[in-house]
Image (cartoon, rainbow, N blue to C red):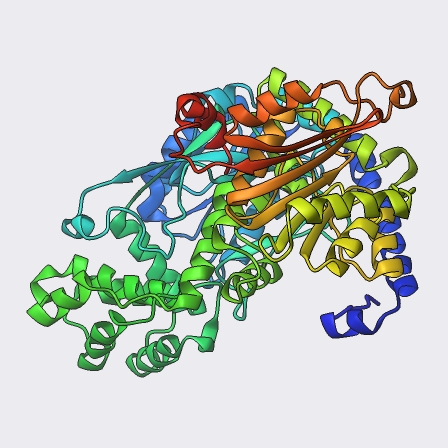
Length: 632
């Protein structure tokens, strides 16, 4: 049985209990991930099966998909609901190895999709499955290379691949002027979206519904084999061709069947009322509802519901409620009164919570290429609303994730991949990867005290209270900065450093690479950096990061070893730059030198940030900003 650690329970746990759970988690993660790779390689398959579920109105789109894909795969399985004619089914079967299976659609999309999955398992339970909806047409480059793609995925231990989406909206209806893209909070259907349409089958794999009703949107249920996914290069894509009318029609289907949004059911009060009206009218299924809506001149109570639905709140389920009404009035423009037209043109404002939820969803799509998971969406929405995370920082936070690095590795050029691997190897040294994060960066208390005294003399806490401690080691210098009157934030690398800082000094350090400071602009009054700058693999990048997070007039303190002193001629603590070289870099980045103090063993330097429009900085800004503004 899984043990859930709530935030309240975590507060009551001792450091030893937390460390025990962390170690158990890491052990479990390593134990789980390796078998995934081994399982994929132990069940090789060269069989590729293309699957799709369709109905009569999508027949022409399905035919295009079959024409495009079937010559390049071993089998094609088309599931239809009985609405295709015998001639249409015969035409589909005329293509190589096409199986057409008639399955009754019982207002349950996941189960409808399971019909083609079960048929595919009869052919090969470990086959590679390529799926799409009728309006999703794969590129010729993808289908021609599909065998090479599958072989590469198996070789590298992946059992799922995301495929890039290219939207192609058809502007054919009069309402398109009001809504050229899907009316959706955040408008997240962009070309950065990757959809997991290629995956390796397993005997127990099936689709299951999500949400409350579990009958519209689905996910995979894979009890035996977890997923290990990667996104394909964007030259492999699918074209998603839809019109506003088709989008609104599908929204109406989602609403009627499952309540809209993430299958919210009776959490949507409009859905409850709609089903009551439909039950009175004897409408039991989606196809019955669709035919009734197409005829027009609907029941007065349903007509009143449609007008009211145009004022549904701008939530995910509210949007699909509103789109249901728009679909009806787009089909029957003669029924639009001035009141209805006004409601169509002026949707209700979005509540703040819904707006932030939409933003989180948009970020997930743009950065990770997927819907946010429930806990992730809730966590980031709450954190932004409470001011714990700046809204603009979320994309960068998601880009730090392992999922982002793994999924989008394939979109990089070979040179970018080599650079990323070098950077990871460099960071692994600082994180003490070879010892699993063990070992602390300790320095004598007396030396730290002398540095902080010098810092406080030239950067007094009364004037520069908010300090970023870069290279905080095991936490002692952050604690001493706090005791000196500063509000100090310490960043370090290495798990033991973070653990010791918390247990010994009560200091919460953040694990962060100094070349990639994840703070909003103008956050700190000063930066304290003792025996850290010399470890920068890219000093120029580091200085620009410091400039970004510092306020105008903010100060940077550096303490570095002298380059030529024999005591510092060791591989782990070598300074390659002389003070004049360091000062030159800072000056080019818009700083002026305030203090320089040299001794036989160390140099102490303090710089002050100049505003962008300062006369001593303008000369260099044209070059600097090219790098500076690449920061997300």
